[in-house]
Amino acid sequence: MRAFLSVFFFITFIVNSSAQIIKIIEDFESNTLGWTEILDDKGQAIISEGVMQIESKGEEYLSTAWTDLDPNAPFEISVDVKVRRLDGSRTFGIILDFLDNSQFILFLVKEGNAQFIRRNRNGDGYISNSIKLEGGWKADVKLGVKYEMGRLIFEVNDIYALEARYIEMTSSGVGLYVQGRQKIKFDNFTITQ
Image (cartoon, rainbow, N blue to C red; front, side, top):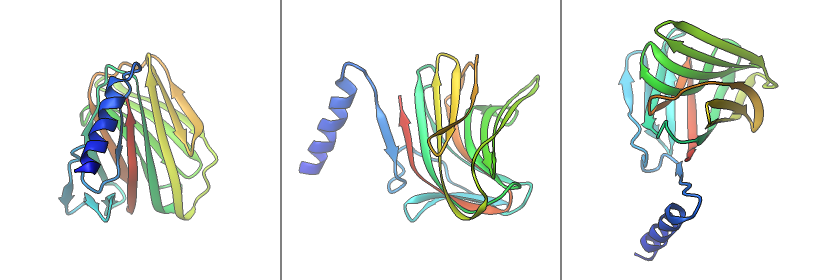
């Protein structure tokens, strides 16, 4: 009971502070944000052993996991990623502004490269930037996204990777993304809004 009251007081304090900033940390022990788990013959996205494990079983298949945020307010997202093998052919990242399979924003990372893809009914927009991210076995990577006043800033390991401007967010859909034959573990997903 004492722990419950402490947590309640802490959340109340954050919500009632003058800055009105709320920070939620999903450690995947209790699925606080209500992530959707998916299992099929092509891949899976499940919460297990205190992490979100997303596995793509084929080179051309992608797996995702979802939660919601308020697209009309500035936000920051960060997530810790454990990659079994980091190379130039397998990608992982964060999906934002998801409306459907033809309308979304995708921040992808692979060995030595960060990419921003804006897909909409009029076609794809694309930005790519080289980053210092060496390939190899068992890599730990931290992904970050900041959104404010139409600017999306992407970071890899707390280092600026790329920026997209004049972006209007219209959907609360946010997800985690894995493509290529691999299993990736996501942990400590944080939304500050």
